[in-house]
Image (cartoon, rainbow, N blue to C red; front, top):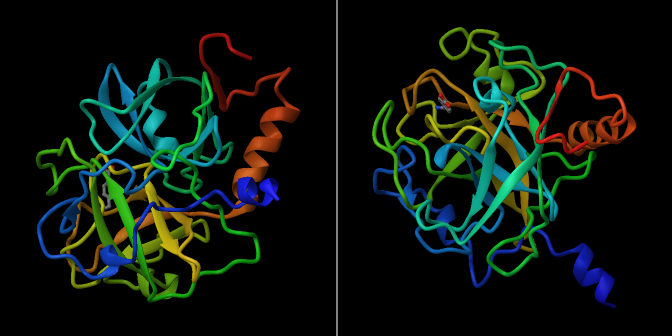
Length: 276
Ligand code: 4AZ
């Protein structure tokens, strides 16, 4: 029946295999490859302030995106989200209505670096714009599996940014390894997940923040595993990217709190355009 189709319509990439799972060769995202085709990563959004790309985000429903809390520190208002592989011209644009920062997020710490972004008008899903799958609370991801990062972030540390969406394949790194003295020396909290390569070379970078780290299941449906959060520069040896660990509870708690408290917005709910 059609509801099964509707319910399972997440994380699908049209006519795509796992071609991008092979470690890529050219130098993009840092060390990734260019992915100019719209529809390659249908859940990827660009969050823009004054029409300038600032952060990535991931579509999780017709009206909600998940992103990183630290993206909204300087500019809590007047954001737009765009969709499509090119920043200019985008295939779709939506004003942002509400931004919800996780209540435990405290700048300049990186813990709980997650935000929910509500669009002012729903996006109708197509094969080239639709939501990613969110993991079940019980769904765990093994270390050393490959995952893909995508974004319009810098191509080298503090370097130029692309107009076309970039992608790269990284490996999940276990937190004990990532907390080793020569890596992040205990800074990785249970809310964080490291991914990349200890030898360096491939990584997310400035401007990729808020964007997705995804991995496919055996049916080739793609799940959100993490959100680009921070790192010591980009692609340096022993300094892999750090991601906000994705888990259904974190997002559900955010949405539930939002609806519970919506008549009484709390300070961590940045409400835009008087929309509540
Ligand atoms: C940033 O500044 C940033 N190498 C994002 C990701 C990484 C480093 C910095 C990971 O937004």
